[in-house]
Length: 406
Length: 91
Image (cartoon, rainbow over all chains, first blue to last red; front, top):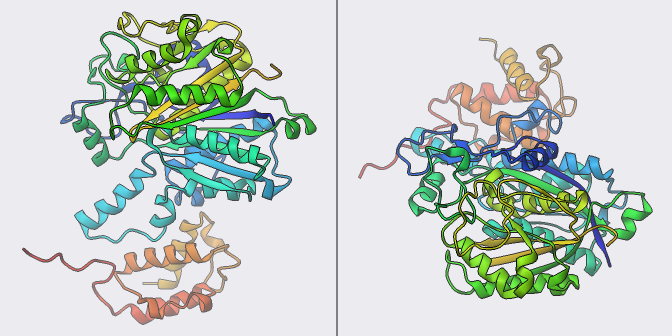
């Protein structure tokens, strides 16, 4: 059974729409900047990829917006775009599902509740509960689009939304639904949580050059840059898409999943490799069929060379023929939304025949010696592509996509 | 203090309605106030008047109009220090 993507939507630091996202990737624009949301004077890292203030009037009334964290609002906006593009209607509601991922959930709503109780002895309002549920965006998409098949929120840190997309693919193949909204959503960590990330010292400290703070595969990379946003796709069986005359943007061909069983924050090369091999096998693709990999490529000292080594381990001589870029230098690391956001970048490239660049890659790390598509996007036909997501906890997911009609 | 007018104001603001549309005889159903909205509005009212409406007094099944809310609020207006948590224990 073939499953295809028929619509995509993105809210990111690059702008409130997929058009903004696509254009910025094609023009090598970075959405990274000095954080404006809270005081960063006492932090090591002062750079983030924040979604600029945007209107949500197209997805929720004034009164409803008060009940929704940005966690849900970002997701509703991305879904609105994906559904419009796909021309999707849940005409058989119990055959349509929704699968999303998130990392840290609606952290600002949690923080507001704790601030009120601890600092002002003020009870949180009752709607704090439905507002701060990690699964709230899943519920809202289900209600909005009358999706009455299976619905899940998956929480596996940086692999959350890749897991969600993979889970949806498996559910569709297994016959539990024919179509699904899939993706992920993440808001910037609240002040207190940011402080914890800061002390973990995995975020870039390139505060003097914020736009280029995330430099995947570069010799002088010094950490990732936290981002936020949402990405949603409409996926459905190729038969369903064909029957209603919807144009497939790409086929979602397979998923590979593995766990490191090694360390709560340190990755393991053989875990990455197992997920890469799993995705190829599930999609029925040979290494030589792949033209592009959207790397996890966080820009941390640890991830990037290990990821390159894993790709070399799986692809052998073909590794040198691959284009392997990380788009995190543009949209930041959106944690629970990252897998879906990068899947959208991959799908756009497959559909239109280009691959996005790795920004700020002036001097590559000698241990990162693949074709990382530095600085500028490249027009090239892409037959099939992978999108990698690796997470704290040791959760690895690789999604395989094939050009529609390939 | 016209509590009825103030309640109508709170509800109009909450539901983003024109205040002229919200009169004390309006039902929650007419104003499209569901039980989640209702409990949230009660929270705002408790906060505004510094009252604490005990759960056993809060019969949402039979609270159908703004006038019902008004009666509920009036019964508790004498209470003082509600909507606040007890002082934390001094160590």
